[in-house]
Length: 515
Image 1: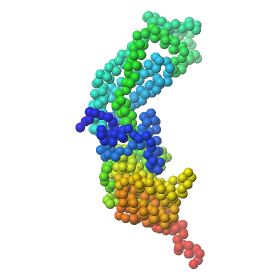
Image 2 (image 1 turned 180 degrees about the vertical axis):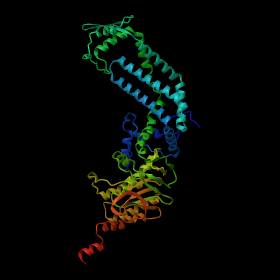
Image 3 (image 1 turned 45 degrees about the vertical axis):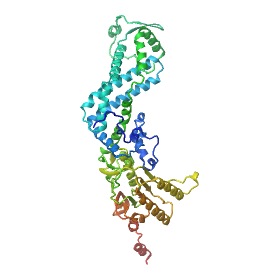
Image 4 (image 1 turned 60 degrees about the vertical axis):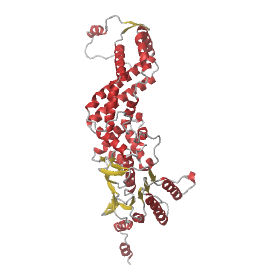
């Protein structure tokens, strides 16, 4: 059913409308998950829209996520994207004209730039109003917007604005006057059918031109700001046409707030979709996949296939480097992924990917991967290694304990917790003890969790924990595949493989020493 009370292309009425407003500050998890890099990259060149707050406001309603998915599906149709993008480009031109008008000091010049801006707005509105009924719109958001937009385009408010703008622009275009220059004196008078002698002068002097000659003409700079002479000429023209310029004054005063609020909001909000689609094309063009995840507010049976770290891919793709994709799956009663394996093997990247997927999904965005089923958390927490802060007078291990205590105090069974190399600053015994306690508390909460650790024993803590490990090339243990697969933790097997590769097994060493 199409809603007549369209409010936002970002959220359905009564369902997570906060997402259409955005949040003022970047979430704490952005730094750990490298999401700040993603948002910075995809909003580059669109700073005028102030899009970042939209990416700071995750949704918590599956219906709101589906609403955005439907809008994305419409925009993936070439005709729809082209029409909306063309409208957005004209609106950008309108804002550039308004911005230039603000920089000028002559009143009538400012008003003429303002008139040009309104003309662009009216043209963009009329053009889109004519195109929308012809487009194959399936989403609730675009269908409601199309109906709202059509009603506005037919309204007396808009039609009178468009007609008044057209008439005034036409009348200003018909203004003619004569400029008489004698020495350093300039006089302006009404045009009374005087002849234009420029063509005659060029014809008379053409006969003196022989072959290629030097062109002594000078191109005068076309600055937006008028100079002193131009301003004095304009003052004289205003005295010649007082009624017309009085009408221009009245027009600008009457239509200062011409931009319809809902349409102005749409122009900004739809950029979330356009910017993300433009951003993902750089990856899909190289064969990487994005999908619309199935999201749930209840089920924590999550999975993803062909997924990748979007921030890392953004760095690797321009370099021509390969982007490694990974899979994961949790089925009841599994809740916690414990990631082990060799250093520099992709464990942290896997953890970031897991967090990124769930955060992007909660924004209603397509996620990097071929398919995914994800949970909508009430909040996402990260516990990554931090440098010691001298201001706190705390050691690294103490700081880690305080931070995880704060997280567990706030987290609920609907939260998502990403822990990376936690408690690596302490001894193996302490890390094992604290890790066991933390996992037990997370398990009791029922939260989803990814726990990257060097303590292999934590991977088999209970039926809620699932062991996944980064892998190596079988014939070369020093080479990483950056693939993280579901398998038992086996740090000893990895150590044995390294020892064998470099001739450091017990048998090798014994033969060397002759014993």
